[in-house]
Length: 64
Image 1: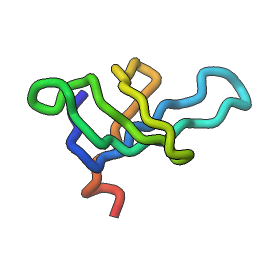
Image 2: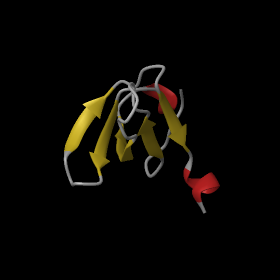
Image 3: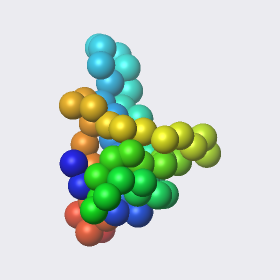
Image 4: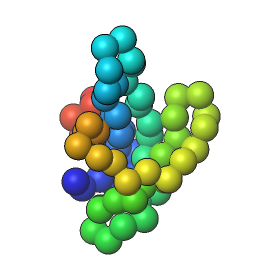
């Protein structure tokens, strides 16, 4: 997994009916774009995440 500041981290729902969680990556704490990432969720909550297999990175250039 590789990301840069401004990309989105999408954590997919694990059970039926659970919505995806979308967060903006505000800091890359690993080497060369690797996790962990400091993220800001849509409600303003910030957290440090090491994404698992239920997550994907949406790169900024593909969001435009």
